[in-house]
Image (cartoon, helix red, strand yellow):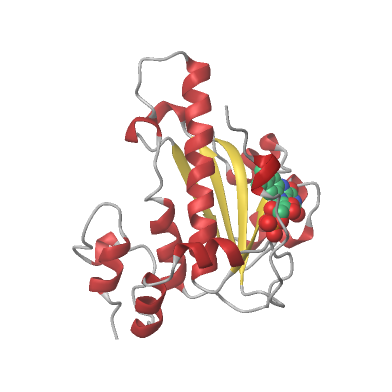
Length: 209
Ligand SMILES: Cc1cc2nc3c(=O)[nH]c(=O)nc-3n(C[C@H](O)[C@H](O)[C@H](O)COP(=O)(O)O)c2cc1C
């Protein structure tokens, strides 16, 4: 069975999927149309409220179709000026994953089934502002894209851990990139479903002025 173009096209920021060339991954995988359709109906508030960081993943491969949807979700994030000043590295190579473990203060769970590194690309942000502003924009672009990917992954039944404790130089060397990383998002099927952590009460968090 081929991938469900009609379902995927609804996920893509750039509009309909026109041909095989528009998709990265779900080229020849059996895709559960009902599951994906159910996901697209998922209430965003339920997704937000039930997400919890996870550092233990099942040794189970994540379907390419889900990875495709997660990446497509990242691509829908708002960006400064709409310039999309970020890049995503989907790390498949196990040696590079181990280098990323080292680059993240030896956090072992960085060696996860799916590893996405979000990087800043201020060169894409073609706005007439000083470089430090463009860098700040690209940091925010990359961060928002990662957050969208994290929520999408959760909506698809996956869990994640956001890694911010990184040695930027080491990550850049591991990826052989000139782009500065902002975060690593590690994804997989959860070892155990964890309850969301309690958060601050809105009273105290919100400052009305
Ligand atoms: C900016 C940022 C940096 C983080 N860095 C790490 C990290 O390096 N290692 C880690 O295990 N978790 C990291 N986390 C995950 C947080 O520990 C986690 O989100 C937090 O404890 C709240 O738990 P929750 O995500 O389940 O709500 C990071 C999260 C954010 C937003």
